[in-house]
Image (cartoon, rainbow, N blue to C red):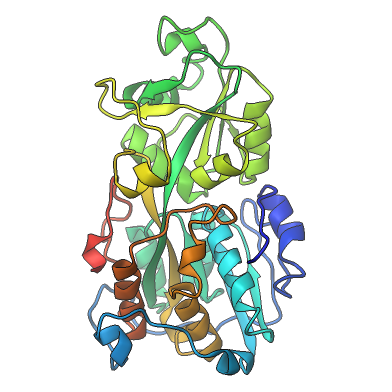
Length: 382
């Protein structure tokens, strides 16, 4: 079993996998990532949704059986570089997959950068990376950017995540907040106006609120604003923003009046320092706490979502990239998704099998033509 803990995004990339992955990993908060020795060649095609240009379906995938990666002897022969960038939320899953994969493919160098979902798509659609980590589906503007550069991609959901709204452990009043109250707190109109707790609910104390959240290049920011405020990127701007979750954790844990949000996995790693605020989606008094069970069964709304990797079609034929993605979706790795070390919610086996089939057949494009969807399921892949 791998040993992988979250020390905040900066520490993860600066320390955690530099040795383990034999790659140059550099923090990319706000846009800069590692520059490995070689970059991938740009793909060709339109990147349009398709059952389009499929190749022959391997027998296992066609039969609905999990597609297993190449045997260990074949993996040991692989060489090359895999350049990955994008979401800091997806980073722990991809980093764990890379660490496990390199136990068998020691001559494959894997570079994982963290420039946020939006920042990562800029690089991916420019042809700079082979794989894109994304905490939301590709949006129409990004689809157009990839099309303009002839980049085709295969969309690969890898897990479910729940966004956690967190408060300080000494906060005794905000154990449950309605979606409407969260909107009142985070909508653009709240900037400079909603600054004290009792403005959210009269029974709350007359104390200043200090807000913490992901930066604007983050897919977590995109999803939260759409789910709570009704429009992607619509948010007040007077909050402490950071791509380093350690900064957010320290901020909320150090101030009784603080509130923030980020991926559930980062709360799980720091639960001794934080408290969850349950969410009442419909204002009917049903307060739901994010957990593996509530995210998986869809009851934690509106802050549950699938997370993805996107694979450049032209790189899917690269033996190292192909083997890595097959490994990522196989029984050799997927049981680890839901362990404490990784901390996300695994998909159903039949969903991983269906997604592996789409990868094996080279099915390009997105099944989310309008981008992120609040409350989305992955039934469309089965």
